[in-house]
Amino acid sequence: MEIKEAFFPAFIHSYFIALGVLLGGCLIGGIGAFISGEPPLTEIFRMANKLKIWALVAAIGGTFDAFNSFERGLLNGQTKDLFKQFLLIISAMGGAQSGWTIIVWLTQEHIS
Image (cartoon, rainbow, N blue to C red; front, side, top):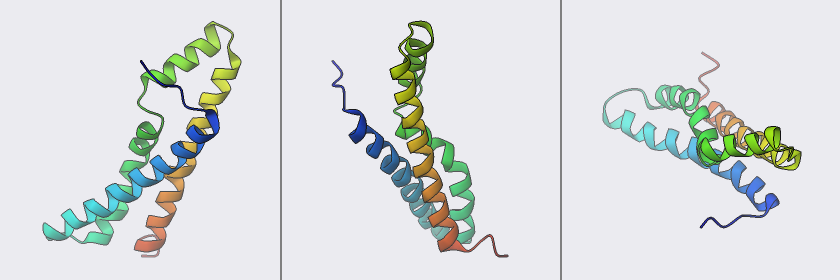
């Protein structure tokens, strides 16, 4: 049985989960790049570009819940669920973009 989370905490969690997935994945991946002899900052920047979509997917809890909410919103006329899911996705996108911006600031790869 799934426990429903209130919307505002879910909105905040969505942002920070996406942020954490992106930052954590890139920084741990940078350690792996260092160990394997590749340039860590360049690899961190590359991973940030690849991990943005996965941070979004992780933050919204996979794809089935999102599609289920969209289905209820469109087919059953529950536009409130549709709007809430849209806001959760926007929040997750903001978290992923914030993480990506932090990585760009730290690596300074866009300058070269």
